[in-house]
Image (cartoon, rainbow, N blue to C red; front, side):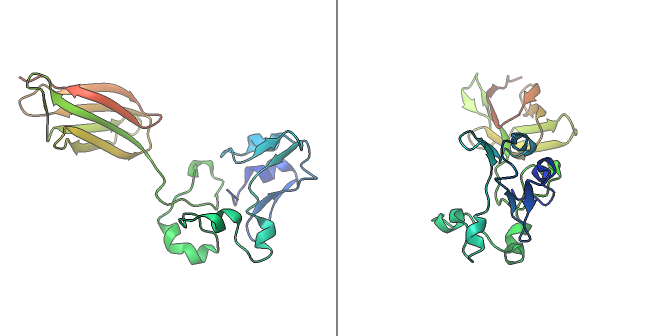
Length: 202
C-alpha cells in the first residue's frame, strides 16, 4: 500500500523505509528474522518467506522505477486496470477513488476505483396468489447509526440495498393490502441475500 504513515516503518526500527518517490521498502539485511513486520500491516500486505527468514512485500518494482520503467503489474495488465505514476497525472481518477481501510489512518498511496461494497437483497412474494409483489416499500435501518434506507421492490419482487458499510441492520416491508413484515436482526458482515419473504394478505 506504500502508506504515508506506514505502521511497518514504525515496527521495523530502521529496517523499513520510505523512498523519496513514496515507495515503502523493506531492507532485507536489516529485517532478517523479524516476523513482527508481518503483523504490523493492517492490510496483510506483508508475508513471511520461510526459506529466506524474511518479511517481504510489494516493492513497487523499485529497481524498474529507478530505470524509468513502470512496475511489472502495470505493464503486464492487458485491460489497463492497473495504473502507476504521479498522483497529479491521475488526479481525476483519484478524486473518484477510495483507499482500503481508511479508518486505519495509514494514508495508503494505492487507490481503488469502483471498490465493491456490501449489499442486502431479497425477494417479496404473495404465497396465497403465488405471485411476486411489486412496489412494496422496503426500509433497511442501520442499527448502529439509525440511518434508514428505502427502496421499492421491482417487477420480480426483488429489492437491493447496495454500497453498505454497516454490519447490523433491521428490515421492514410494507404493502397496501398486506400485513407488515419485520426482520429485526440482519448480520451483514458480508453481502447477504435474505431470501424469499412471504407477505400475508389482509
